[in-house]
Image 1: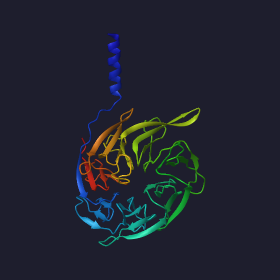
Image 2 (image 1 turned 135 degrees about the vertical axis):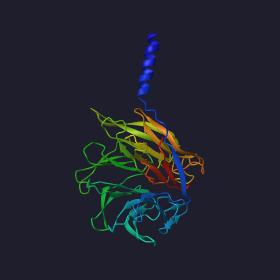
Image 3 (image 1 turned 90 degrees about the vertical axis):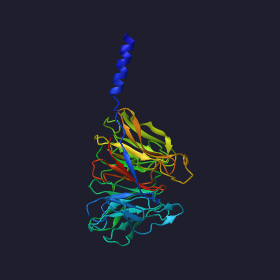
Image 4 (image 1 turned 120 degrees about the horizontal axis):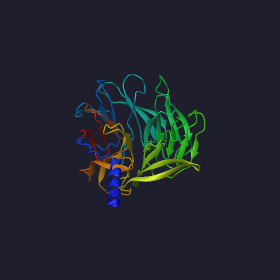
Amino acid sequence: MLRIAVFIFIIVNLSACVQHTADLRFRKQMLSAENFESVGVFDVDGDSIPDIVSGSYWYKGPDYRIKNWIGDQKRFGEYYDDFSTIPMDVNEDGRMDFITGGWFGMTMRWMENPGKDTIWKEHIIAKTGSVETIRAWDIDGDGIPEIVPNTPNDPLIVYKKEKGSPVFTAYKIADLKGHGLGFGDLNNDGRGDFIMSTGWLEAPADPFHAKWIFHQDFDLGTASVPIIVADVNHDGLADFIVGQAHGYGLDWYEQKMDKSGRRWIRHAIDAANSQYHTMAWVDIDNDGQEELITGKRFRAHNEKDPGSFDPVGLYYYKWNGRAFSKHIISYGPFGEGKGTGIYFSVRDMDGNQWKDIIVAGKDGLFIFYNEGR
């Protein structure tokens, strides 16, 4: 009887550590069959309603049925040379522009919002080398994000917009990087560090003029963009989450500090899917804690990556105190399930206080409206 009582006690207490929550309900709306791989959300026309921008078009809110021409995004085979949609009022005229770049054109550029029904003018920011995608992070802590393209096998360069001017100044952080990039405070010194595929760069006090220190602590392979920095297990130490962009695997790396120094312990989140090229860390279920949103990039290298013919999917993963639990938003073969592109957005589009997911890709442009539980 004593053994049975102890067993019941253990089961009850283990169950108490796991948060049992119902899956969120999502309503899928297809906007377009266009196969651009990036989508951003911002107010294009100044009516205080969020609009959607993807590739050569913007879609007027709140119903996103009206499709407006921006201008040609150059196509190279099955790819459009448009691998990000970062909102920024570059020329400070009160209208939101956006920043993009591409692998084949090897440039980073901004598209100027004309404020009327005409083609958006393209402006070259820099010749960067092949752009896998671009992210915006506040590197120097002044509250204004810098622009950071991921250009594999080229130097890591940060672009800072000059105040009152559409000009960007380039600052080289490292001579070489691979596939994958993340940013966040890894060593708890109040400064944001870079994570690359072969290690991390420790930020100096002056990020644009002093030397960054490289720590070759791991090899992440063809890592995602972004690699997410977060204290996953709430132990006061920053961890990170990384997907395999062109192979199988989604993992988090736990940071441990002891007498021997800093160690990173790999924990699998989901090994069953491939091409986790992009992701977001955001509170999707309104519980005050962030969840991981990611999925399989549809035909990242077309049919040349492991798992290319597997079903596609979009998921969120919730930390339950011990591990991540997987929740399916969309899953199935092409035409039924929905994969990700290379850059997606999370925003409350319908004002119901639940964040929605706006995702593009070679399998079309969709909104997944979050209807809660």
